[in-house]
Length: 242
Image 1: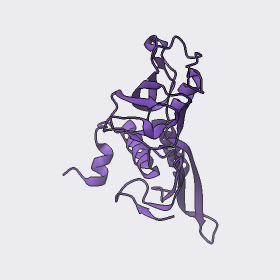
Image 2: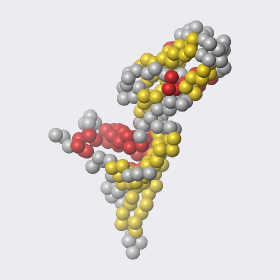
Image 3: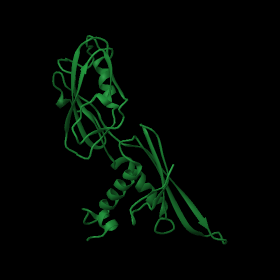
Image 4: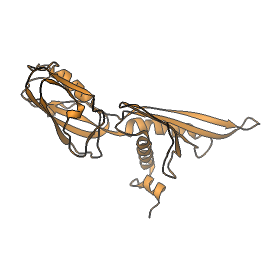
């Protein structure tokens, strides 16, 4: 647990709690005073929705085990079915700053258990859960699987237009923020009136994106959505135009 300062002038002044549970869980809690009484709920709703829906994540969108007719096939010397392998590949958490599709592969020589750290990604891609199980090879065989990685928003169903013999499209689950909640704390005067509101926002991510980065991205997207000149609007508000 520690305190992380955000850039001066950003929507969320400071992080009051931060925790790394494991490879699957990064948690932080942020506090900010809204501009005026009565605006905390509006700001909280906007930031929660932007955090959950507008944070970009990377995932495997296409896998090619090679010479396989359909995803319910079995491969000699492989414990899992092709379908099971594809489901395991969907669970792999990746991080990249590039939106363009990128290629990776898994060179496999059995017998052995294959995990995410065995993926050979391009330099711009990082595997954030290296121990994620992929497949178990039970014989001395060579199996190479080609992967396509893409960065995007939310959930996109797989496109069967990309299906080719030996290559299988996957549902794209690009949702690095797993949970976002907010609460409002009010300070009242002796007369019962509300003097001040404090907004607390809690963010939990899957490890590919730090909660601090998710907050910054959500703030930028929210500002750009309502700005007549969206480009770099949040950056200018934080760092100035110079």
